[in-house]
Amino acid sequence: MLEQIFNWIINVLVGGIDKLNYIGIILLMAVESSFIPFPSEIILIPAGVLISQGKMSFFLVFLAAIIGSLIGAYINYFLALYLGRPLVTSLVDRYGRLFFIDNHSIERSERFFARYGEITTFAGRLIPLVRQLISLPAGFGKMNLVKFTFYTFLGAGIWNLILILSGYWFGGNIDVIQKNITIITLWTIFFSLLVVLIYYLIKMHRKLTSRKF
Image (cartoon, rainbow, N blue to C red; front, side):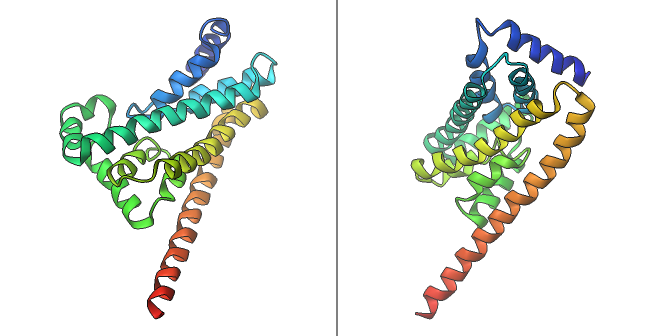
């Protein structure tokens, strides 16, 4: 089944080079980064395979992926910023099941953001099931848009690069990709949590130091 989906995505990208091409990647990545849990793996890994075959440009694929990721993140950020927590809660109660999300998952991302701060908008982009929702608490908390953009760009850029290179290095071998992407994902999650922990410890150290003076 996965191989069929993988091949279908490749065929869509190949067949759409003159039609959708990189615009298609932008649209799909915008969907993936917003409320809809559409896995970026089935977008960017096939694109990486096509790059290895000389059928797509690495720079343009990466740029399209970043633009799409930012668009999706902005959708969540501005919805949260302008609608506020009560209205978003109401919308999720009504329509959340359609997108496989609930208020419990949003609350979890809020606690993550509240405890560890703005750096979570970077680290959250590297964690599956968190990356789609981490923009919401940033919007609720009225996080500075420039900082939000920078952290989102950085986190999404690292994740997108990992997926593109996985397709480029491992080609169309589904078994090899599955095995390696799981390992890479676990290491990426570990790295992101380590970054958050270091940031949190530095923040706490500064607070304690400022209290002494």
